[in-house]
Length: 388
Image (cartoon, rainbow, N blue to C red; front, top):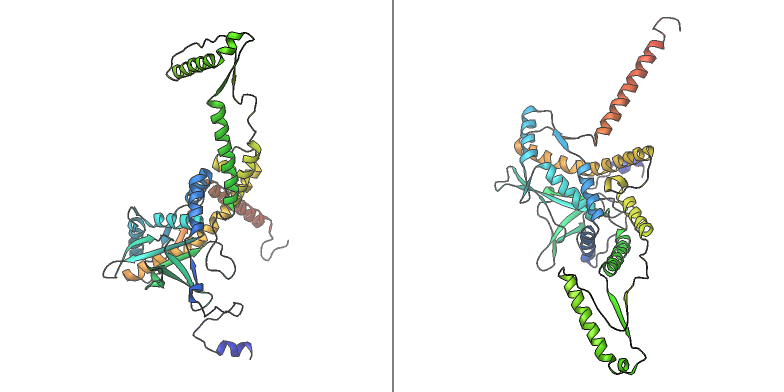
């Protein structure tokens, strides 16, 4: 069979030749949970290590704002009102708020699910909803290039959503042949556990050195009286020392008087604090490298050069552009559905703003350089019909 004959052959199903056939003996194997212990681990990771939570919030803000454009002026006015005032969940509004919450789930868990909520008469878009992943599963569709979002009921059985065209699903960097994405925090739990152990040890050492504890030693003399009443003398010294320490806690200065050979030393004064700068920086370098943000944006004053900072900013720009590429189809689908329900046939376009003022400056300098080059080339090129 030739290639042309293969194209002429019609099959309503889309088949993938390089995929392994799905097992038929256990349909439960086709389900992949979106939320689980791994998602709970990522939540705990953001709560335990503030720099990780700060990095994700900065990525969300640096992704920037956007505008929705279309060719019809009437549709544009309706689209502007929708983008600014659509309800998002129970406490937010605006298409930007939905996009940021959607991106938050995408970065933290590697997957994000949203839904377009219609009005009761199903004639307009009433709200947008970011779905939690705890009670959702992904099932392989009719082919290996399709995925179905399923909801788990109270009995644990998962069933596909009745209106999949209203559901939005995105995955971050999925592995080949897989529908689920991979979290931006993948690989950081071990690094974070080492960092938290160092911080815990530092806390214990500072508590030991900051809250001083004393060792009071009484050595009886060679006389018979000291040996006979050593126990009573030691108890009297302990009582006086305890009262002196209690008075110091209340802000009173009280002297401690003892008779005999009494030695007072601070417990643990001979030991030194371990230098944690090197191991802490090593762990932070791993975290920063995984998150893709320059160190200075996270408050880390590591030595760097101006050229290196510029290169880091360029790399960050490419990372943000990739996140925008994931959000753009989702936003386009929402706006297209809104326009169709409102009776407009135009196609919306998502126009992202420049990531930073530095990008605008660089673009302006590039346009200026190209204009100067075109002007110089125009002056030196031979005129048509003339001699060079």
